Length: 264
Image (cartoon, rainbow, N blue to C red; front, side, top):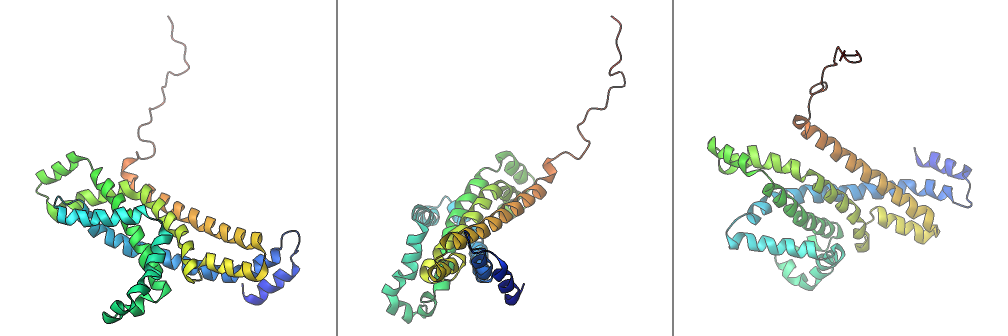
């Protein structure tokens, strides 16, 4: 629908006790905010997942010089609120403005979008690292030993045996992480980004229709959240196809003598 069609529809809607016209009029702006929310989520998830693959390898190392820094990174970003992390990166970087200018990074850290993506990426990388670490540890030791007996080792062992199995184990927990990150993007509105929550807050300050605006924003979050969960359920169903019996297999054939009385 274009803006004129939405406005014509809003003019015909009742404005009491719930102002439906305000919802229709503000819907295009809220959808624009949802696009930014989805963009932040997708970019942070892509970079964070790629980073977690390297971090989990270091985390599983027996060398303290490798696993201890990763442990400290995960410990900090999992143990502190995301809002505090956003403040540290966005507002705290101004304390090191001259140092950042000398290395040419101040142009990045003065941008709210970059700081939001960086914070969300670091946060999800920490959580994903722990999810993958637990999934890799859950791979049956017998399968790993069987692969080594076949001559697999190193990167080939991880690529063919450990990581595919670990990804299936990690999928339910990772789906929760994706949902949590998507909902956590609402915090970036505090640093002037006009995501869905930021747009809703601006509309409320103009119209004072709190319930109509925030309920609409909540419903949009709800729709996308269950869309994400449905997508992960579909992926999990596809990946677990080899664990399910084909239709008709395992059923006992009907007894031809069923129902016939047997003489004693």
